[in-house]
Length: 469
Image (tube, rainbow, N blue to C red; front, side, top):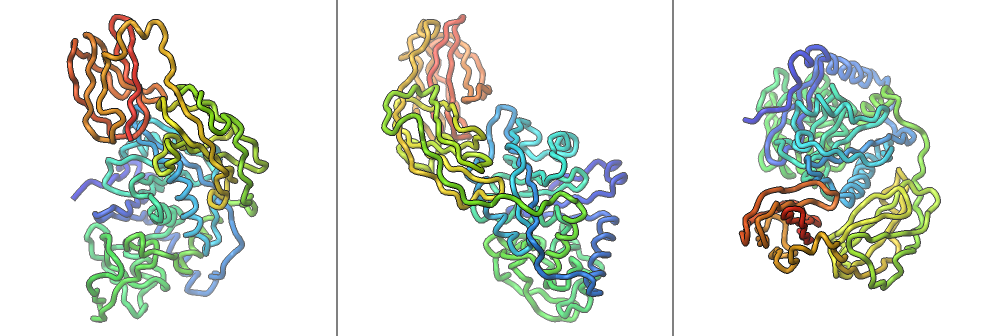
């Protein structure tokens, strides 16, 4: 067993909140709904039974999505922009039949906080509310530490998603958004190895007062992750053998199995959205033209690696621009991957390498169809160090191997008794320690990126760059 991030008891009692802990990679999770929320859901499901709700597809509602990307206190571990763009495409595809279309509101919010980054439940309750944007669905991407892949906290009304659980074609965020808009699990009542008092029957005779309360989702008793089809049969109270429906997003079938919400689930989410009053009827979903890359000119060989200024033309209707830079044009291994609201960016790179860069423009509601334009190349050189930096011989500050892979051990040989500091390109300290003269010290860095290694001996500073791939 492991601890689930429940709210503090007094807060729980005051708000009657539920905590939906969802989609652990290999472990069961628990859903606990407050009595008020169950009452509201059952009341709407009764309207479904009486035929008072239309199940037909409604006109598109554009739903604002505010993205918060968490790093640790040193600014390490951010969810990548490349993955975020793909996730937004995937979620809108998953919700296509519901009539929901999500769009970005405001800039991406980067937050450096160890506790939030690790999914600490007390921190989520005490601090996440301060970062929220009102009138939007607030989604936080974090780096790990928690046992769950995704969580919706109704009391704070935020969604937390573990970075590792939301790659290409993942449905973790889709599942959690289902919870945000009031859906329970298909196996409701079976969480944490519990057995509900009322067990749903395959014939649907008790579908409104057992399970998830939806009569168009099949009975489901499986609260652990499972592949499709389920490798064994379930047996209902009438001794009927069956398998649960693997296609429903609110089940615990593996991501590749899931393809849909049921009609009653969709009607319930639309009802919840209407009550929130955050959606609008129109949003720009155009496919935009590609920007023209202006500077540096293609083939430039004279770019200072520590200060590369990239410029491109403005595209009418653009919400933001997606910039990617890669050594040797290998865009599967990005040296820079950023969303830029302007038409220029200044970046720091590793010196003496050929780079290729590209940019695409997109609207807030369409991160999918606008393509990157033609790529351009440039080559960097190492910047010349200042006078204060050459009092220690650069050749005596050795780092090897360099470049290296994330998690790989590397060695730093300092030329004198000095203070050793490693920072990322934003200036955040990753490591600071004292080293003795000619001492070899072994380290490892788990996050890919460009780092600056500095040795300070009574004010004389030597620096070298370290590339972690």
